Image 1 (cartoon, rainbow, N blue to C red):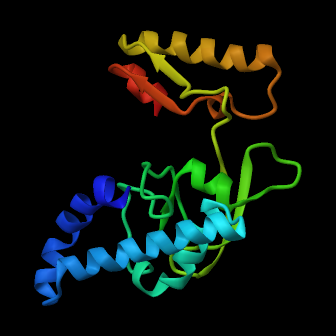
Image 2: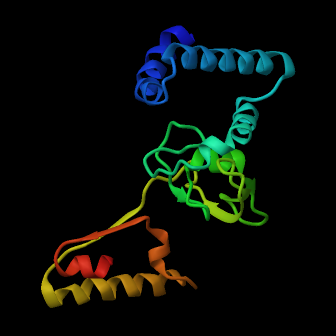
Length: 186
């Protein structure tokens, strides 16, 4: 599997690094393949989950991972775009937060992290993941200059009609608008 799926990507990814450090890409690739085989064997024989093995690997190599910071990919799984920024400025996606975090008591879809697996720094982070039945919720406002007050009044009346004890905008993930509608969305 490594030979087919990962080898070309690893060689391409480490090419520049290996040249700059005067190392062999082949040796780095062989080390990664050996580590993946070890992890797979451990998963089979010890009954460890992939998440447990990933957590162990992140802790073992935290000195290398700790200096990396990016908002383009979750460094926990290396697969998804991150949704949360931790206190240490590392980022994490919803799936990893719910996998590696602890469910907050009394708060549905909220997870706590007390240690960043990337840098091993103690943190106090609570993040809310999107429920599986929910997608991005968008509110949009039309423009129209002073007529934007109609949209704003409607939004205010809607909050009163629902009897919410918190701002109705907390129900939406994204607000967009045109002209004066942009001011309302902001």
